[in-house]
Image (tube, rainbow, N blue to C red; front, side, top):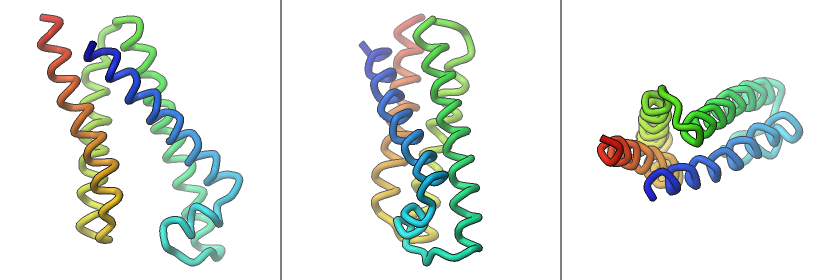
Length: 125
């Protein structure tokens, strides 16, 4: 049961991260304005970097889904890494920029992944 919840959460996250990365590549002005900045040549570069970073996270999620579905070793560490990264991202963006939506979305997603990963590991033993 916990494995299915983790897979569903990762699947939704995969779709969102992939959409965000494609948006960064094909419509960087929208993404930059979504973050509350003015679109100019410098911020266009930032949008491109965000796109590649989101694509990296998307590939990591895909790899974790592959490992988890096939019960291969190594997914636990990567899932903890992704969960703690999202947790820190949400908290960091909240404290630096005051964006509550990031705190709720990223931090709750990260915390949920960490807790479910811990509980699923206990279930398997």
